[in-house]
Amino acid sequence: MTDWINIKAGASAYQHIQEQGLSVDDIGLLLGASGGPKWFVLQGLDKWMFGEFFKDKQEPLNTLGTSAGAWRFAALGQNDPVAASDLFCRLYRTQTYCEKPDRNEITSEAKELLAKYVPDQAVTEILGQSAVRHHFIVARCRGWTAAETKKQMLGLLGSAFANSMNRRWLGRFYERVIFHHPQSDLSFSKGWQDLPTHHVELTGQNFQPALLATGSIPLVLDGVVDIPGAPEGVYRDGGVTDYHFDLNFSKVNGLVLYPHFHNEAIPGWFDKRLSWRRTTGAKWPNVVFISPSEDFIQSLPYGKIPDRTDFVKLDAATRIDYWEKAVDAGKRMADQLQDWVATGKVREKTQLWLP
Image (tube, rainbow, N blue to C red; front, side, top):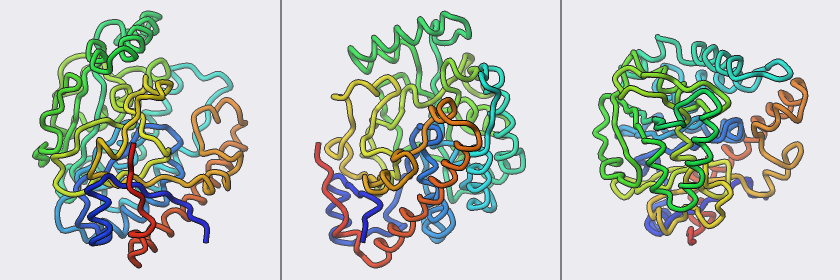
């Protein structure tokens, strides 16, 4: 039988799975990365996790997301998270733009999608429950990175160069702001000092602006200005600082479950081309990292998972059809993981994640 998923685990997570398998109450934190439409192949996993796997979890589930990851997790905490996930998937998948959309059009579309997916009532539902404790990372801009003029490009070039020399230098251009559920004790994120980091409580006034900001890609969408309750300034995509994460999760109470669309974890947005800068199980001993297998990827149309270049390379009808097929294919990943967890086969399928 074809393996549609790969599972890698850091040393302590690997040992736990070998001895006890994997159960819902093992999970202390759920991670969701930036990546735009790449997340479509994970929607089947999301629906299984949101509707079945996490349903009977005894302790609160913490989530940490940036950009598309944060948007995915906004379905959790709504009265029907599976229906909310389906709605987000459909709205995102069927987006269309003019032939050459500008930043204003793309920003307007994002706001419209947000209003339909997470209306005021949904925010009330999310903040009024305690079973899921959301955390969104948003990047607060410093200097020219806050501009909506050509200076922003100069700021991006400067921050890319600084990051290439030392990731900590990225903090001269961006601050990490973690918007969190009001009942979060923030225990897992205390002590993060790699970049300037602030914590802001989520409220009915800032939930939607914070969610919009964490997906506001530089140069593509407008930044979000002066989010209520947060320091004044311009806020952009959380993936700028934490694209696939490179954070210390040693304070998480339990395992970290990370369903990902890529076989690597790239720390920040500017690290994509820095092949030596990757996060591994050596840094994340308690992380369970789940990704599509090469067989799964090759089974997709065009032999790849969706990405933002599809907006340019494909006409709207072709792109929407392709993305729908990718979503449907992702159900195979969910079915397989569900089977492996239920039967205990997850023990033999999990590999020790070494650098």
